[in-house]
Length: 352
Image (tube, rainbow, N blue to C red; front, side, top):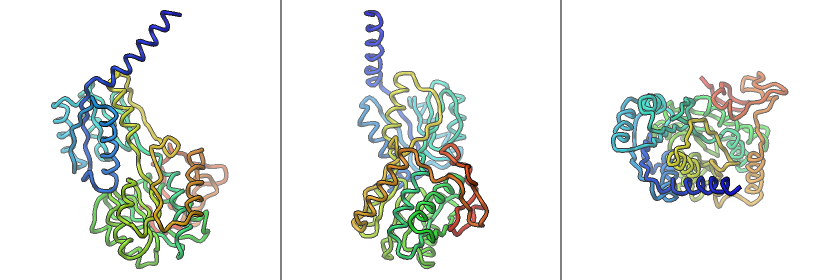
């Protein structure tokens, strides 16, 4: 018994001391870190990790393209001593994985991918069910029963977010319509502005989006006197003091801190991590002043239901052509987030 106690104490001590072991972390961002969106959320997570783990030092690079240039930048970070690389954009995966093969002593984590190795893991928020709560908010707040959704690239993951939003809105207003405009890129302010204005011109009184930075869409909504719902960073609420409803933000700090601790302790093993509202990798943004208490209560209750395991993706669900996308007894889970190739009933738009 005494021997077992000594072993346990030694393990605990090793865990504590591991946090004091110096670790250099390299982080690459697809855009500008202070974009009120995707990159801002990543940056906030990195800063929280540094605060929680004083032994961690960070090398950062902004505006890193999804090309071989990203591999060169990550390689330079490794040459400067980085033992943990965080590649934060979808298109960085191939290049990070290539480096993981040739640098087995370096740990890599990638946002949103699927490639797994002993020293390569992926992480992302289980956003699709969470978007249902944002749809409930839109359904309550829209007087016209019409929302506009600006989408960057219509990959299955984005399509699922749009579907959950529409299903949530229709749970409040069965005639709700969501019109989608695809820009074709994650960060094209000119096209985002054109899309936002076009959607308002077509009757939307709520705008939301899935692009890297929500700033352009939110500011246009605010300037034209309609509501907005944000995505990526909860900080986006600062852009719309009058029309902000709520939003969905990533909370990367716990995952990043945990991953750095595992690297320090030598216990990291690559795996796919997908966490949502339950694990607080995703959080609801504070409500805007325009949102009445009954709506806040309804949205919070929906978010709690989702955190408890609710999914909107259970049949029967029809797509926007009138055909069944999911029949009675069929369902989709977080593991299926990349497989959406249809829009739900009431969505105006085409997936391809």
